[in-house]
Amino acid sequence: MPGRPPPIRHAASPLACGLLALGLVAMPISAGHAAETPTAAVPVPPERPDTLKPSAPAPAEAGPPVPPTRPAELTPPASTAPKDVPKDAAKPVSGADSAKPEIPTPPPTPPGRPPELSGQAALALKVSPPDDTACRTRLKRLGVDFEPLPPIAEGQCTAPLPLKVTRFADGVALPQGATLTCRTAEALARWVTEVQAEADRILKHPLTGLELGGSYVCRGQNHDLDAKLSEHAFANAADIMGFTFAGRASIPVKTMAEGSDDAQFLAAVRGKACGFFRTVLGPGTNAAHANHFHLDERERNGGHRLCE
Image (cartoon, rainbow, N blue to C red; front, side, top):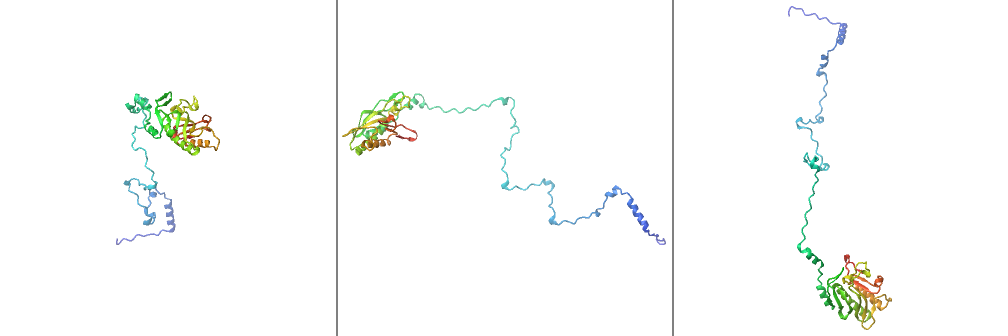
């Protein structure tokens, strides 16, 4: 204000300034003043470039981050476990229910047997003999003389349709006659035509007859009572003991001197028999067949033939 003199300022001495500074340092600093730190006193780092800034976090309302999709070739197959399993499915059954055994379902009843195959009709079907009408027709065409015989039933030895054969083509005789089935008689008749051809070729004399050792006989193999029944027991076999010719001596079936006409003839007709019969046995097979040819039509598995 005008008229009032200005205040007088005294310059502080250096000693007074030093004492003042020490006093300020010795003063206690309160907790409130120590926590208050001006923000301007903390240096702020420079702003990070945009290229190095981390991506913004997902919004809170979007939930947790979804993991990336696994490649198809690494994705495990879907579980085969059942999706919906009732809660009580695994509970054990208790009480009276667990003690009851499970009753099995009975198998279905098989269909009834047709009435036409029951009783006497079935029995008649089993024992009905085969029809050999066509076979008998072939025998007549082959020039065979035969006549039918009554059925044979002697225990297990049977022949429902036996024939008695007495003569073959070209007058080849069976003096004793042969009781055979039609099939065996046909095989014998066809073999006899080959025997006639071999007699003309090797011996130069015609065949006139066969010496028969036996045809139907109810017995076991090789006359053994404990052996399996022979094919003779079914009129299915014939034993040839020898051959007769016109103009020369007969030839018995036995081992002959090698190189002779008789030996050559027997070997030839024996080999021919293997083409008509399923079993051919003779000298050299065993002692039981040392003096005859055994010829039969025994059926074997797979059509096997025995030619010894």
